[in-house]
Length: 174
Image (cartoon, rainbow, N blue to C red):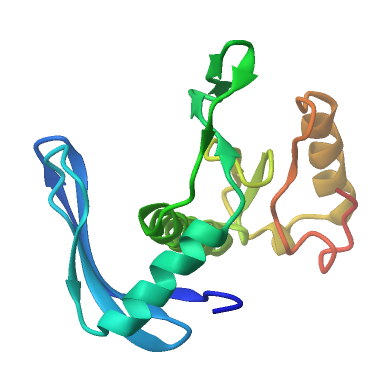
């Protein structure tokens, strides 16, 4: 398997004793591979296989990925002054796809706010700042909106940008 395109369908999430749980059908390159079950009980993921051969290929694909440094809260874990390296697992590949799906869902919610909100933050981050306007941004004079954008932009932290995709259409410079 040269590349694995992972898709999750029939996703169910719930609150368990050790956090949030997940049940989902896992598709690899468009083929139904397995059901993942995370009981949110602190234990390992469990799998119900739909396609044993594809699952084996998926595991081999994960193992073939480059190792990565172990981190705790973003800080590399070192042993004898060197980072401890970890193997990629299918659990991590599935987690990454679930995280991507959740971020995309959150971004869709934010995009609906772009009509009457200015929203900014560091791209890809979880936290952002928003300012709600009483009416649609298109109802305000361009010079007034540009002044508001410039006012907020002065206080941006490094890496922050406006997330609004409608500013150019409103003839505004972010």
